[in-house]
Length: 565
Ligand code: FEO
Ligand code: CA
Ligand code: CA
Ligand code: CA
Image 1 (cartoon, rainbow, N blue to C red):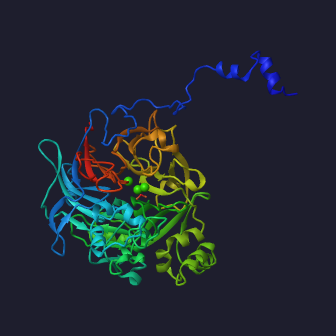
Image 2 (image 1 turned 135 degrees about the vertical axis):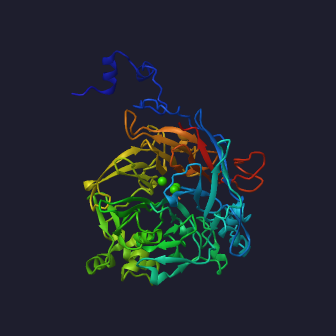
């Protein structure tokens, strides 16, 4: 017979519950409670989480601002206006200045930088209070916001004092904005869509082996419309500037060297594209891993029909992105599902609940061929059995073993508040394989020290660099109290500390660190500081003044971090 609670206490000779509690050994119940395996890293001493309005780095490292929002590029737009560096810089890719001649110059190059979204307060003076009051935007306000998104090509150089400087007036500097006149489509939906006006919502991306940038259009549904319970940019307040949504949500390819025109590749599907991690299959096919960042959406992979031939011209090589198979991941069965329109798949798709739901929202919705399937990729993926995931952000391919790391930022719908990083191993070590295995590599939370992983990058030693995106409204509150401002972490993937996270940087107030990218020599890390002071309610009530301090407005900027051996 089990003793009653009272008799159990008597048995212990303690007499009362209070005595039992006070007699416990003094062990702190603070987070983190679990002792980590971590052995100290040799190349830096981790920093502590911080709430300071500055970019904090470990001892021995320094950063300098390369370029900030609103800085003139010294070049002219097609309409004759002065081009300026856009807002909310995200993905960065570095291109050695001699890359097209086979060089690896790590002291001079071009940066392709994505500009993800505007903050109307800073671009057009339209305040959160204006939105709350339901005030319409003027055409001028919308026009200013359209210039803030897209991407920039920025010529950069390491000077004699070992500081990275932007080269003003370089003929290679230029902008792509949401007003860029005509971007052609390629692939199965080319004939339906023909061209797009500009690009927007450019989140993360990738670099191709022929040195073009892949720029991913993510939150395109945020631009038109108005909803007092949500936040939209209201561009449809001016019908002439409203966007046609079918032209966005694609992967745009841009040549920073200006030899090739920008293209949007429909073979890679349309969804909230986070990123494009490029590698090769066993037969030389180009393989691109891509996340769709929304709760319960999917992970994708594109495999080209033709192999990428390094000896072919750049124009020829980019054709790899025009024809191939798009797959969605089924984690339960470890299979890649081909998203191909056939009589069999058509029946499954058209009879699915995902199809019925889309039809309910738009009477004209249909998937009757491959082009329409790609325009409505999500519906096809869901109908054919893709696994709903916890907001796929960046993917990266490990430089040594080819396994694929995928950041899932979180999914509050079922209590995954801290997110995790998943690792996929393709069967036969072939990136083009149709089957794989996976593991949860790192779980976010106080026990690991990071929460809501987003962009990833590998250094030459195979360390995984992880930036975090705790949403600004939740930062430092409730479950996110232990984490401070968003930061940058290093996770070794080999040795005694494999899988443990070490904090390398802490960003300024209300920012997200994005777009980490190493130069070819591994000695410079370019990093974006995005949306500092994002929740500022008005220009006279700023929550951050980074980087200039004083009373200046916060300015998203690209920084260069040095100090690597
Ligand atoms: Fe723009 Fe999914 O981050
Ligand atoms: Ca992201
Ligand atoms: Ca990345
Ligand atoms: Ca994010």
